[in-house]
Length: 75
Image 1: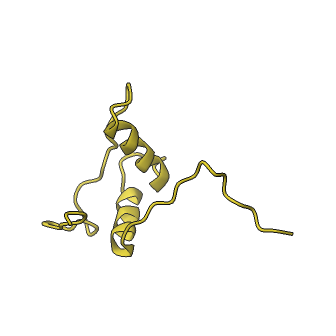
Image 2: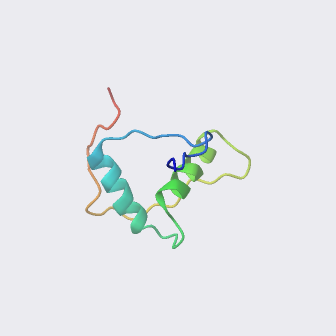
């Protein structure tokens, strides 16, 4: 039996391990009890492209996942 293959409409997302972990920790602390990493990313994408009715995802207050002065992606 061959392993199941993800549907072709799924996308991979690359991020440094530390950033991905901090994002997951922040999502866990989200004010939205139904939030998961995929849901938050989809909300952000819809908001970013100005999809009708899209709202920027809620985020938690700063916490241990925060990196004040970080320069992720500024290269």
